[in-house]
Image (cartoon, rainbow, N blue to C red; front, side):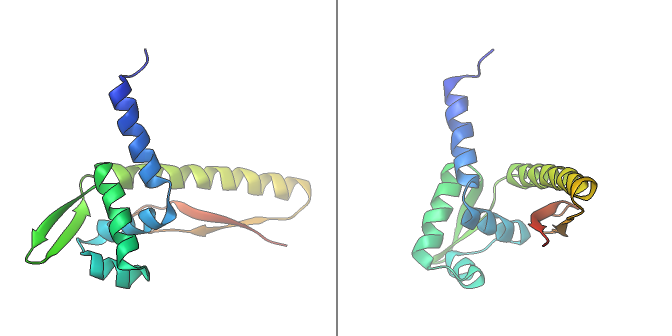
Length: 132
């Protein structure tokens, strides 16, 4: 059974929002604590207009929400969906990296190192770096 077209459109918005590394960095920061545009821009070394644009995309995808506090809006994660999805993807990257490493070790003896990443609150892996 094919899902409802509206559901597919919402899913596409979520995946599109998660497809940008800068937005993933913003989600990570918001997972730690609510923050305003100024704080996020300073922490991530990004311009305020750029941060605002990314926050808008995340908000439209339903991944974050904002609450006014005086002249500032503080953003927070709307639910744990983005975190859970990132944990799942990180775990999958780990499995693929381990399989790749085993192939290299079995084949030409060139190992692949995998760096640990605790950012998403799990024992997932972050990236694969081939060693020469």
